[in-house]
Length: 552
Ligand code: GTP
Ligand code: MG
Image (cartoon, rainbow, N blue to C red):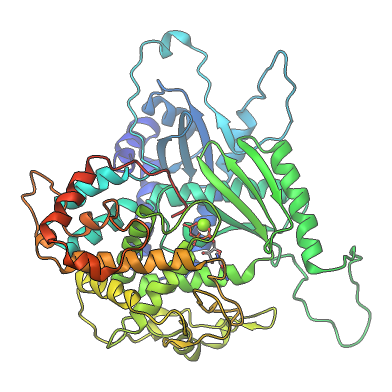
């Protein structure tokens, strides 16, 4: 869609608009060259884009050209795209915010005969076509941008056509990662929700965190949001030393947690009662990290809104930074996350499973232990930090460098295939009973407490991020690492096949249903003839189930 916009705008709104767009595009292109911006810079840009955007529910026969012509009466359209989720929607980004105001001037209030309406005007609109002659028998001419991943059996076939395991891993990453359009939609949903929250806190922002922005998100992953009140003017202003001054009278509460709970309760209530498109609102205020959970139907996102969760924001920035340091990091994380989900090592339901966050830390730790290391330790990133990077949250030192140019990487030329194989070997034999995984030091440390799996929380260092994991789940993970390592060592399952037949091989074989039911010992399996193993794996492909979506 983006590629055609110049032609469309030329026809619809004349040359000036196109000049404006071309300038904007040039700016975007320049921005794209500067690939390694810190996450906060990316976020500012995306938030600003979202503020100038609207989300429009369209009817299926919408004519793209007429639609653009109609909207461009309100100003220059910078970007737009269509997608499907319980109907067809368009995201339209204007070049200026005034265009949204102009559009609001013209939009009408729905006339309903029996129901009553909540008079809250949001940037979620519906396209109405009153000229019935025009809308009848018209074929839609827009192209929808996919917002979900391909089913696992299609992925397996796609990977089977690749010529090397390295290509398979890159191809998996490309198929699963968030698209440009999906990222925009995530920021737009945050921006729409902010429009409600500002009724109480005019200076607040709602920021996405977790896999929506850390570079490891899979299409269809949940949208974690943080209601940020730190920007409230005066919060950080120093007390004057002498003379008169004024301070706000503010209501007091027993604890910061209490404040967070009451803010989330009120904002959650508003989302439930007033925000169009938000359904199934649940307030989970007694959780360790209080949250409001709901589904945003127009985008199809499962949303978690939190407040006062600044450490999670820092973890997100750290993961993003690691993912940007070397392309192998993201490919290995995507591959391991997909493998883990295919074997139900991770789950969308909370429980004793390893979470995607823990799994990502495990991959990062493994990459720190390579010789030479592929990524530096968190302690090293802290040493490189400048004064502006200093961050202490609730007594926890969350400081690390944000300027990519200060980070010197060592030369490690290992292939993705080798890293995947070594990852499975590493965790198939890791001393989980004694050692803790620690990305601050990049070295296993003695476990400080009893837990089947101990992964030190990078910023709240006395906490274990995998405290929920039980022995059974850890054993399943180890058994699957052994099995996958074994499979990758088999030349039979490891040879690229004829691209036409798409017979599973390499990484595709690892995503097939596992033969480790219960926990067989690896030794026993090694005695089976490899051909038998492969044959039964291939047989099982016929019944590969389509997995439900899960968070990343
Ligand atoms: P998916 O949603 O599964 O794709 O991955 P995610 O990284 O978004 O994980 P999740 O939605 O569970 O959590 C969102 C963010 O909260 C993570 O990226 C972390 O920054 C943070 N987080 C999640 N679990 C933990 C935990 O156990 N400890 C800490 N400190 N932070 C966590
Ligand atoms: Mg998430």
